[in-house]
Amino acid sequence: MASKSKRAKLNPQNNNTKIFMYWAASVFIIKIAIIFRIEGINTGYGSGAYFVDGAWLGADGENYLTGYFALLKDGIFSADSILNYWPAGYPLLILFLSFFGKSWVLTTLSIFQSIVFSYAAYFFATELSKTRLRKFAHISLIIILLNPTLSLNSMVVGYESLTASGFLICLALIIKSFVVREEIKFVKYLIINSFVFSFLAFVQPRLILSGLIIQIIWIIIWKGARAGALLVALSIAITLFFPATLIYRNNKATGLTSISTNLGVTMNIGAGDKATGGYMVKDFGVPCDLSGSTVDQDNKRIRCVLEWYLANPNKAAKLFFNKSIYFWSPWYGPEANGTMARNPWLTISPLKSISTTPDGINLIYGGFGKFISWLWLLGGLALLFYGYITLWVQNSLERVIGNISMIAISTNWLVTLISIGDHRFRIPIMGLSLFLQAIGLKTLLRGGKPAMVDGPTLR
View 1 (cartoon, helix red, strand yellow):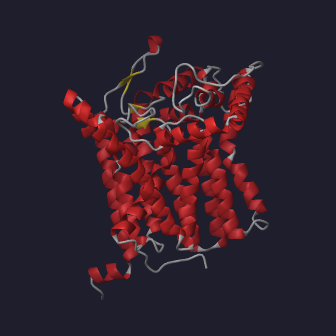
View 2 (tube, rainbow, N blue to C red; view 1 turned 90 degrees about the vertical axis):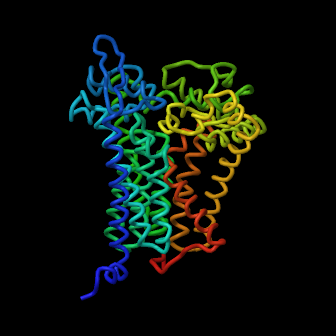
């Protein structure tokens, strides 16, 4: 009988799976301890105000809670305007979780999001370890699980953590389909992925674009354009299902046929002759003749902004550059730009502590601080693209993994270009960007030689 060490060498996959599970479970247990120490949030809504424990407020936390309490009071077809202006998907999720107890609903939310995050990281690393990228699985798992901003956001009232987890799960299922190489299982994974992307679009509609493109490309790689036409139709139908329920809810509640009415407003803030590409309180926007219903006005703003970009290519290019910088900017410091002031990481960040004194402020926001901020921004982008190129040149399953990751990243980046530059908008794709950066970092440390092993290919 072989010894335990020999059996582990003969079956490294089982050994890796256990290690990944221990890492994911350990991080989750630590989070449970943190969740039950988070002080209550004062809901502050009239006579029914009370404290809710177990989660930190995100940038849009109050809006989601306002929507949740409107649903709690009036039912799922509440006519409260905030459920039309902001997508109602995330408040509906909180409403569903409140069935386990309204007084600890945010504790339930944090636990749910933390379970999904740990599982997503574990599942992704496990499937990656079955490919020729096995030696990158450990570092990818650790970097994703221990990234303070990404990991702590699973205890925040906001869609970002769930969507970041969803992208990891979807890429893991795509990898799994090429490892298993069974037609029936491919269809099964495709249907599951379609529902996952549908849920992601339910809590954040702008992710519809990423989901549809990824699913279509995956099907074409597997089946070809003609043979996969029926599966494309099926996938699109499933992906649009949950977002369509939001349109139905809004129409039933108020007669408005839309998921939300804030897209045109946000696009308008990021456009115009005096716009910076980021958030502004005045001197932003483009001229637009508004009339009709709220939905009509939102659609007209969208059209006006797009027409302005086409008519002003030089100004548009400058704004696109600014928004790109904001999208990839650090969470704190002189180049930070966006709505991450409530980032839980900042409560313990050494940079935040240093900037509490005049000398510290000069250090962080002076020339040295600006140099470090730009080094962090450009260095992160360089590692990301280096990691992607490392996968691209393999010309096999690794290229598919890199392409899917980059599609998710670039489509979210693209949406930012036509709306507002905000570093918070990159959190949904942080798991994938950290993965590519891990590939780039480890390959760079090996002198440009990727740590490839034997494994499945597309052939």
